Amino acid sequence: MGLTTGFDNLHTLPRTIAIDGLNVAYREVEALRNVNLTVKAGRMTGIIGPNGAGKSTLIKAMFGLIPTSSGRAQFEGKNLAEQRDRIAYVPQRSAIDWTFPATVRDVVMMGRVRKTGWFHRFSPTSRRAAIAAIERVGMMDFIDRPIGNLSGGQQQRIFLARSLAQEADIFCFDEPFTGVDKKTEAILFQIFHELADAGQVVLVVNHDLGETITQFDDLILLNHEVIASGNRKSVMQTEAIERAYGGHVNFYAA
Image (cartoon, rainbow, N blue to C red; front, side, top):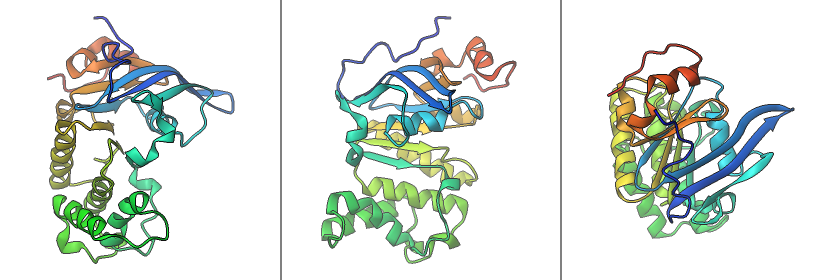
């Protein structure tokens, strides 16, 4: 079958995230072990694996949000953690304080802070970018509503809009489909594909091995180490899936 630990050995190409020898440990327990990957721009890449496999840890380690034991992550040959202004990262909904007194407009405008600067007034350009992002996710009717009053799917769309307002080069979403309705799921996938088609890096942590897996161009199969990576067909093989999940698993193979 030919399991791989990289995307066709493309570490030297521009517009890629190159991860080399990445290790993460919590109190001497290995969370990630010798992760080597190249994530291509222009393709929608999913990170899959069982619960506790280190999927969210991989994202946080790449971006320098948690300490690593060794290894590095680079984008266009430069340290990725030093390029956070080029990253739009949406964590799991459970990590967000939904009681915070902010409206839809407030949250999306937060995506313009890095470009505007702290304690500076938002420019007309930033305001237009925020409105365009809210329109793109179909939430203009809710623009002045507190985020805590929205449904799970609506909240996820608002944080997608905030990421769009950032006008980033790298878009990363941690389990964005958890607890969302079919309409929101369709909107998310449509925009993810549009971002990839525009040449951006699109990286999505996904727990579903059902039919939605066919939406991804490339996959990273993870269980503390990279079990397989590459195009969807090469990764979704029985041997690799069973190795990652520790036994027989039903999955959608198309």
